[in-house]
Length: 431
Image 1 (cartoon, rainbow, N blue to C red):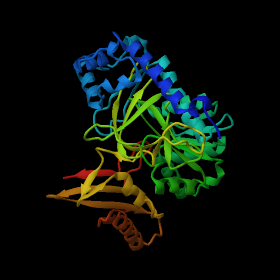
Image 2: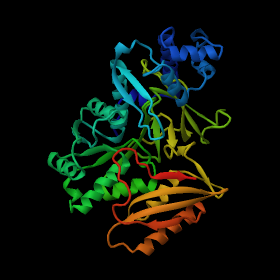
Image 3: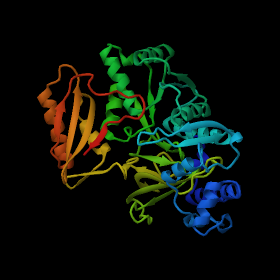
Image 4: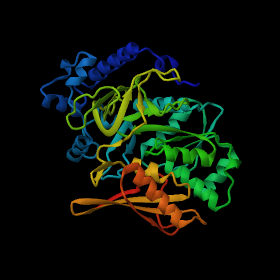
């Protein structure tokens, strides 16, 4: 069992909350008269920083939404008003992936960038990464923050980081073999893509001494069938992680793999609310995740509506950590859910069912509206030599029995569907 900071990770609940209270009040003191975004936000609610005197007063602070941050950047371009220091104090620029629209820009000071690495240190250590490991990061360094921060996290645990940008997939596999990569950090989609290329090129994955993968950037490692596919194909253990450019690297999976991820309560305050009423839900019930980061002073986020749906469990884990867990990881996003013939459907639920068919190389889901009704269409690419009818029937059966829906399943020619390195776009809606 490896910890990044065992004292923090295994602290009694009262100590966790005491630390959160100290950091929260310290944060509010540092923002007063400096951060225009939160000064105006409190003023609109009839509050001032002086009204926040305890952790309990966090409930007085209005929720923060991504649309508010975007609006602030539109009105005060290019970086908005959620800045605690002059722009000259910031040394890092990143932005959200922008898969659902215009990206949100985020800035970090040297101090807050170190905080990112610190948070990723928890992620790396929890998965078992040590100074003996060689971590392969197969992505090109664009403005998306996730894997930049992962590189900083590898330094926190003294692992060797091997950058894999500027190469195609086969070249990356060869480099992993030559340098003896023992760990990999990438999207779940790209782990499967590398395995697909290995199969096409007759490259034996056993030549790479890989033992674990840490996945970020999209759901997948918390989707049981996808996780099992990666682990079986590569012969490794894979670990889930959740975070966001605007909030930080907040959650990680431990080596006990209890069917969920721990939230880093030494650096974040977690709340779970009903997404409609915004009232707290009882522990164990599904609700929207609300997060406050405590030490990203330059770009703070207080009571952020993530849109992610989770179930909170505060029982201690077999790994010894007392940090709360999200059972099943991030279950989906409130805005991703679609209603098909009266059934609430999340993309991750469909992915879990489709991935049970081992012959599927890639897939795409389309939800089309026909008047008052919606239909589910699934396109699949198959491995060479696969019985097409049998694969179609299996996918149809899995979705029919799992969701109670009758999808249209279409087999497409190899190479028809797009491949992805970063966040995959497999779920499409059309009217």
